[in-house]
Image 1 (tube, rainbow, N blue to C red):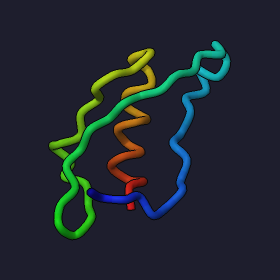
Image 2 (cartoon, rainbow, N blue to C red; image 1 turned 120 degrees about the vertical axis):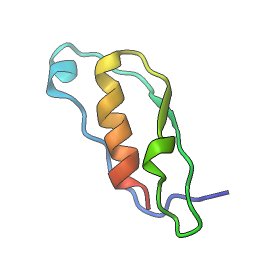
Image 3 (cartoon, rainbow, N blue to C red; image 1 turned 90 degrees about the vertical axis):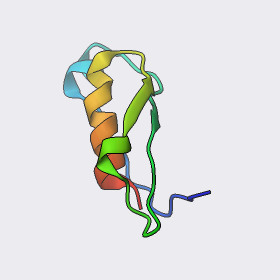
Image 4 (spheres, rainbow, N blue to C red; image 1 turned 30 degrees about the horizontal axis):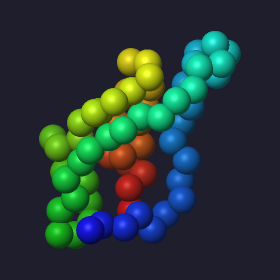
Length: 65
């Protein structure tokens, strides 16, 4: 099973901060044999608000190491 070795923090949308919305976004993705995310495999499974989805997806695409 892949293990994340960096501790980057995903971006928190300003609009959602101001609205004091929070929650957990569950994202699934396929990791290739070199440890990189396969972009077409990134899928938001569960999210408290659609406005969290794109930042979470971008974090997985750029922040996974």
